[in-house]
Length: 256
Image (cartoon, rainbow, N blue to C red; front, top):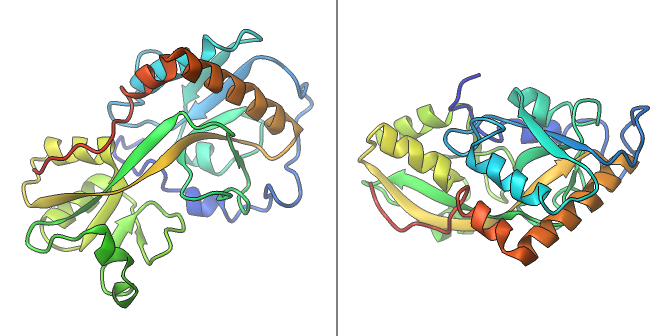
C-alpha cells in the first residue's frame, strides 16, 4: 500500500457499519473469550510504524507486553481497509492507531476504545505562510464555512474534507490551493521535511488520547481489560512514557 496514505482515512466509513458499542454486539468467533494470547493489526505509518519488530510503535507494544504476564501480545501490518472496516474479531483482538477526539467518542462506532491511553498524539494545523491560520480561526462560528480544511474523517465539530493522500494534501497546501491541513505532528512533519515544503505555517491544534480499539463483544471486553491493565502497569513502571516518546512527542514549535 502507499506509505503516505492517510493513517485514519477509513474512520468515517467504519462508523457506518451495522454494529455499534451502544447497540447490538458484534458476532463472536468460536475461539475462547478469555484466550490469553492477544494479536493485533495496524496500518503502515512512515517512520513510526513500518514493521512489527523494530519500529517505534513495535517497541511501545513490547513495553506493554512486558507487563502482561498472562500471555503474549503481538501484531502485524495489514491494509488500512482491513484494520478500520472489518472490525469484528476474526482477524484481530485489537487494532491501532486511533485517537479519541472526545469522551464517549466510541458510542456510535462498531468498536470500543481501550480504557487506558498509551499517550497523547499532537495534532498540528498546517496552513499556507501567505494566509496563516490558528485554531481560533477554524473554530470561530462566523468562519465555519469559510475555510477548506483537510483532515482525518472524524467529527471535528466543524466542516472538513477527508484527506485521501496526506503527501498530496500538503503539497497542495504549499501551493496555496487549500486553506489548511489538520494532521498528527510526526507523520505530517516528516512529509513537510521530506518534500522541503517551505511555504507552510505550523500551529498547535490539540492533543488527543492515543488508544487501541477492539470489537464490541465479550472477547473485546476481555481484551480491553487485559490490555488496559498492562498499559497501567507499564505506565507505573515508567516504561510506557519512555517508549511512547519515540512514537509521538509534545508539540514541537518550529517552522519550515
